[in-house]
Structures are given as structure tokens and as C-alpha cells.
Image 1: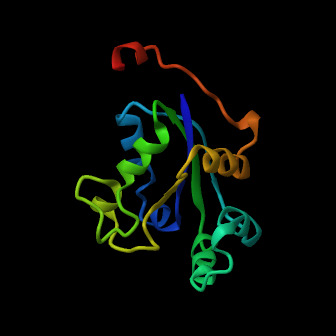
Image 2: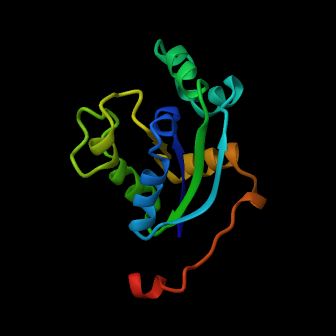
Length: 148
């Protein structure tokens, strides 16, 4: 089983799309094994987006991600990182295919509803920024053998 971090960004929360977005992952057969709403601080934003801090767009990104609450979740399942990223669609909502989360609900590059880890290493690092080991409640649904 693979784990990934999902952040339902402020635009997702403000537009009341969190349930619909997370529901799509559950519909796909992925498990939500940790979830919480929080206000991202500037310090947490700098840790999370460390590779972007020196880029010209970073101040706007930090202002956006700290501007309203987010919902953070850990998603677990077979090839969860790839599956979640494919389900989200292209980063730019204007270029995301219909049927993807961003293709269906986003029309912006930065305000693109959700963040998902892009690799196993990123997932491990990012999950650790938002959750402690005690926050994660892994489980195997009894129906799992039928879905695989």
C-alpha cells in the first residue's frame, strides 16, 4: 500500500468542494486514513513549499495557502500517488481534462483546489509536516479483496 498527502486548498474549502473531492478518492477505492482542517502558517507554508520559496511567485502562493483553512488528508491505496495525481488532472485547471477533479471544478493554475504529493519521498516528508504517527489510522476495508 502506498500513501500520499492531499491538501484541499483554501479555494476548495471556500467553495465547499471538500466532500466531493475526497469522495472521488473513496469512490476509486482509496482509503482516507487521516484527515484534519487547519490554518497553514507562513512557517508551515515555507516548509511545505521549500523548493519554491525563492521563486518570484512564492509570496502570492504563501498568501493564498495561508489565507483560509485547508483540509489535509492522507490517502492510502495501490499506487495511490499516481492514481491521485491522475485523478486531480493537470495543474492548470484550464488545461485539465474533463472528468478530472481540476478539469471539472477548477479554472485557475494556482487556485487549483488541491495539492498531492508527487513522489514517495515527497509524500513521506509532506505527511510528516501535517500528521504525527498517532494521527494515522490505517485499515483494510472488508470489501477490499473484491475490489482487487
